[in-house]
Image (tube, rainbow, N blue to C red; front, side, top):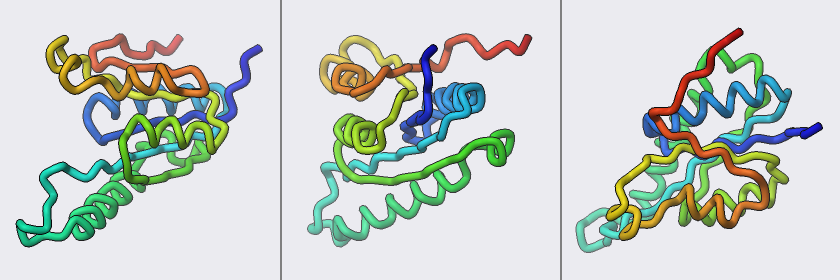
Length: 152
């Protein structure tokens, strides 16, 4: 039997990652697994000191905002049912997600995929695709238009 002890839900607080978080919470409840919530802060390329705002100020504001948003997750349905660990890190999202999974011995990564078009994907790449290729464990990617859980 497959044993899943730790599930990592990577979130950027989008609707898509919120949908994936529901999958992660359901699975954590079913398997009795710890739920790790991770948000990765990537400093925008246009954050230059010439504009009167330091990169450090931008970064600390983004981190505070992400920490506040993470503290409100998961929704009340799972708050008392799950053991939750929350982390905010900075860096390239796919690198930090894979690093976190390795360092915390994660058994399953659950993340949303925006399902962008081929041109956008070719130009920007896909964080989810990179995580799938490099992760030390299985990765469940959830598209926003997938089917909903149906209770028996």
